[in-house]
Image (cartoon, rainbow, N blue to C red):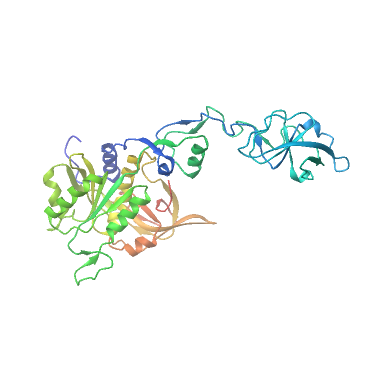
Length: 413
């Protein structure tokens, strides 16, 4: 980044420089079940057909269609049964004219047969079968390659592997698929006033909700989240905790200690390293931000504000895209949708505001209703919302009924 830094980075500018600095994790072959939810890093081409052989689509009798073409209930056709073929039992490989073979669903069609008569059209005879209805060639036969042919593209690179992809890959014999691993995200909360949930509170202490909020958000994004115990406002203690965690971190996320106070431990500890930027982003909530690299392996670190709403909004805007890039998942940024605003809102000039809101769709279309106040400490309002209304930095007021851009927080993308 050449030239002087701006006093305020825009949200897009800050996110862009983060994404420019982040490289996707190295891909490698992973067992299918481990690859669930990951992004494929290879094109998978079918090397076998599905089905790989002609097989029965019904329980019944394999026959030649021309042998039963005249069959009716009034004038049934009787054929000798020369054997039985179960799934995985291909002993009977040929069928002579004028005969039938009992066959189970999925069992291979014997040579000479071209149709399957379902049990329901027969008397289910053992030595001889009575067939009461004509069958046509190919009826209830699943031909080789009907589903997948050799050379078909099964999964393209970049596909997020879901249960159906995993089932398909297993069905063509793949035991592994190249994919990028889940990023390991270490979450550290700082603050001497913090206490673990379940322990007694003092008069001047609060429970640490941020680390749970951020670790849960990282896990939901597909990462492996490690929540570290509370770190007090002591720079040396913070640096020791950070160094201990780098061995298992692809990303470090901290909350608290990045503002302008006398006890902003994260900034005090990291600024002397010269590898972490601290500054302001033109957004509300979440103006104070920090990003850079720490340790010998240059592990990315995000230093987020301590107020829970600021911390969560910052995660959505900056950490989530980085996690997705590490995983090779696109798009990196949560797509916005349009909705009708139900209540007017105001916004500070020069700041891109993220307003907590409830998104809903009814007969009148998509609408969004602001939830609670502007305070960045109001986690109750945050929990009650399922969306963020994005108000551009140059807009100071939006009237009820106008269309606004909305980030749907609970939507997979």
